[in-house]
Image 1 (cartoon, rainbow, N blue to C red):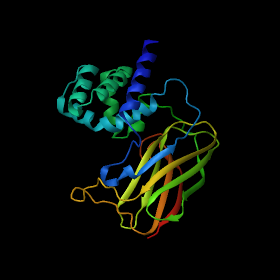
Image 2 (spheres, one colour):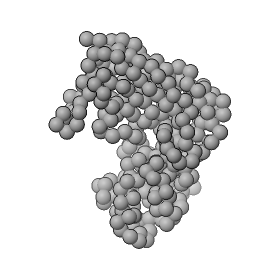
Image 3 (cartoon, helix red, strand yellow):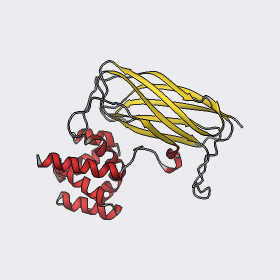
Length: 259
């Protein structure tokens, strides 16, 4: 009972601290894409620590690796996670680190971090906080952008898929091929789903970011022209070479920005 309360407290803390998407870098300008409707909408059982673990790992695994490699012997979970909190300036990361580390102990926790090779989903699967389904499948049934043509502004991306055997823990990747070649990409956690039909929606803010500093990074201008949109739904991390990883299906669509 005490462990369940601890996990619930961590999930509540992380829901206020971390935000989707869980992958993407500043030069990929992932902030243009947000998820409106999440999938799956059913199928989760018990305390849902999986997305919390993935989001934590995405933010912390590189720092944890550096601590492990540079600090030598780390005696306890408390020592390791206190170092993480100090390095990142985040007590929330330190708190979640302690909960996850206590699941397997500090030696196994550090071993799994090194074996994960910066793959958050695989790490959380080996930590047994995310379920595995290697017999899963997903077939994209719909993929559209609305409006299909229009001026700069917000475009809605809708997609649906059907699964015969359910899916494993994975991710959805959205990539926009822009006219000027700047990468716009976001990745979203896709939790284990039961067999069935699912839909999800995303918002694409196709207009220049007023906060983008061109002296620091290229800034997408969303100039008039044709834009391609690609989606991939995956078991595990898309493109990962680790076990429990594969691409279920991919889809392509497009839209046009007018003058």
